[in-house]
Image (cartoon, rainbow, N blue to C red):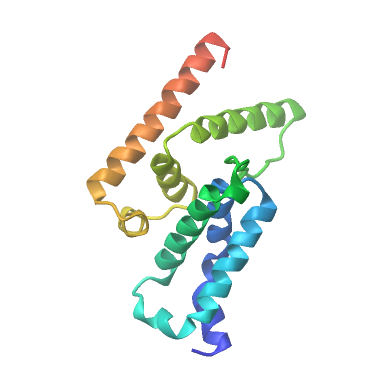
Length: 169
């Protein structure tokens, strides 16, 4: 596989790799390092990429595993989960602040989910992967992925309703 073929195979999902790494790691810098490391590994093994029927799913699985390794390492003892993947619209300042506050509330709720639910909600609701791809990435059966996603969404929905009704987080 030459450089041009390699880039055509891996560049379309570069942003998804970065966003997943950012969801799992503390900062943009950590996510950039993870993305760079992943692409370095893919480049080193570029001749084997054609063995995989879904290179994107393989790359996302590698990203997840690399990030988990980083989180488990002693260097990463102080990492927390953060994410800010939303687009601002042309709205009033008050609406922008309200929207940002809502997004921050959801991110905090996602941070409190079990690891598996965090990854599944990221892959499904943010990255828009289909269930078959997610099953391959997290090595779970479709029913288990659907249950985990449902539980994650329910947990977030109930917490948001509670916060909205009581005005307290």
